[in-house]
Amino acid sequence: MTPDQPAAPRSRQAGAVTGRPGPRAGGAARPRPAARGGERSAAPARPQGGRGKAPAAPPEGKGKADKGRTGRARADKARADEAAAARAAAGKGRPSPPRAPRRPVIRAPRRPSRGSVLDALRGTQQRAKKAWDRPLTAYYLILGGAALITVLGLVMVYSASQIKALQSGLAPSYFFRKQLFAAALGAALMLLAVRMPIKLHRAFAYPLLAASVFLMCLVQVPGIGISVNGNQNWISFGGPFMLQPSEFGKLALVLWGADLLARKQDKRLLTQWKHLLVPLVPAAALLLGMIMLGGDMGTAIILTAILFGLLWLAGAPTRLFAGVLAFAGVIGILLIKTSANRMSRLACIGATEPGANDQCWQAVHGIYALANGGWFGSGLGASMEKWGELPEPHTDFIFAIAGEELGLAGTLSVLVLFAALGYAGIRVAGRTEDPFVRYAAGGVTTWITAQAVINIGAVLGLLPIAGVPLPLFSYGGSALLPTMFAVGLLIAFARAEPAARAALAMRQPALRKKLARVRRKTMRRRVKERPSGER
Image (cartoon, rainbow, N blue to C red):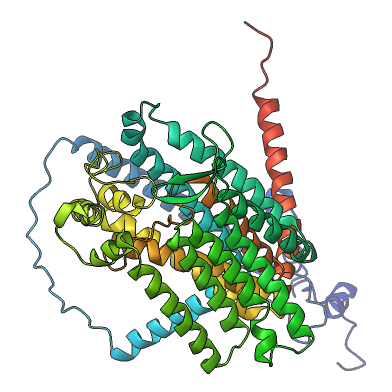
């Protein structure tokens, strides 16, 4: 622009500065498009912190077009779904067209590799070992095993003694009621033994031994002692109540012998054979002599087994142990040779016929009862041998009746329970550090295990009939009471282990919480079930 040219209009200069187009050369201004709907178009805001240009705004009609297409698609889909549902409802009654059968795919069974089977077996073994090594395993085995044996024994006593009671002119449940009363009294004694401290058990041993010896002396007094089946080892208290003191002599020997050996071990005197044998062996010989005066050789064998168990646990030398065993064997042979009844019992081992004068009648019919039972037995109450064929079906030969009515499965269950009880007793004796607990637990385990082996062996025809009951199983309150007290000793010893005590202490708060939760739920149910008052 030269100085002679006129200046540009003011509106054009403003357009150059503001960015809006100025008026055209003809002087007319460019028409401005009006906003739709009375709205003014605003420029998009520049993003904060961005260096580039602001994003371009989408075309004004594009968003509405997209929304329209989406709505039409949804409407089309809804109409198609309604048509499909109508077709399905209309074709429900029509049979579906047959389909071509598919060919079955036969796959070869996968054989597990040897390594996977071995790994699974190892894992199972480790889990079982871990569960078996828990602190409370012995406690639960003793408690559960003894309870199951006692309950099953009550059932079998009721089944096996009904015919015997009717033959004697008594009520069918006579022997069962007596056994049930003895079991309740024995449960109280077991609970007392569990709660008693160990020091009190040790102090209780000496009065119990003195009382047992005194009662055994009374058995030999005419008019007080009673002879049953040729053995004079009972005391009558009038009516149906009788007591066999030799059964309490077993418990007395266990407690007194365990306390004696524990005291000598604390003084380190058990290394001398004199202190090992005296006065333990003379006191046991006194008890054995008083028992043999009554002719009860079966109980004498059990006492001898308890004595040898205590000597074994005390660490008696092999030569000394063998010498005492040989001496006891010689005495036993002499006692058997001098009695015709004992010789006849010895001759019935493995017998299959009653023999001359029916001397093996009881042994043979015990085998018959087991043979009639088969695998699963003839059922409770369905025994045939208890109808006068088998003598003493509810006492010494109750295992034969159990085999006839419960079969091989029932007898094996009883054997497993006794094996579990014996294992738990050995475990308690082996893990404790208290010498009294070790000797007492070992003595009780020897007592119960040896008596069970002798009874079951006689029923199976493998051992001579010794006339001893099956512990916790056979009828007889005099045998049940001290045995249940001895089981209470084992439970107390199992609870006294440090690991078991800690585990029980940890479970008590959890048990209290569970009991409180159960109480709250019970209260809520009572509140909900409370009647509204309307009739």
